[in-house]
Length: 187
Image (cartoon, rainbow, N blue to C red; front, top):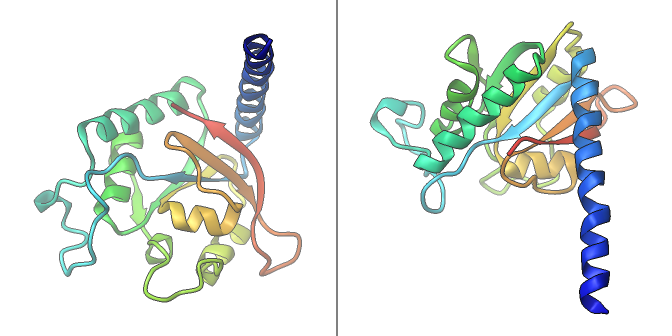
């Protein structure tokens, strides 16, 4: 009986995830949203703060699996012909590398406000520059930001799974925390 119940729950959950992902792609086709994407898989416990933080030629920041994952993410966006007006990345090599592998080296801009929330900062505090950027974005396509899971957690309330993006829009009032519109399974 438990096996039958477990199979029924799985059967009901699969179409829901698929439907949610299709709804997310449909929203992105309309444009005007901000997409938060966590960096791909990295070796070890992360990347320390160092003076050469942005010198990615000297540092390996993604695992082989992370490199493949980043490329697949880019292919998914290309296959859906989702318009991306701008690509921003945190300054850490793992974020820059994810963005450039997924979307090419075209116009990936690094933004300090997309770095991890570290050093005693309130984990629920979202950088004001990030909120302003989201509020001022009115593109025909979408704005894509590759960032740290801690920042996505502060905005969405949950850490996205690897290969999952969070679609957000401005808060209800100026300066408010951005609203989560949908989630997008990419991997």
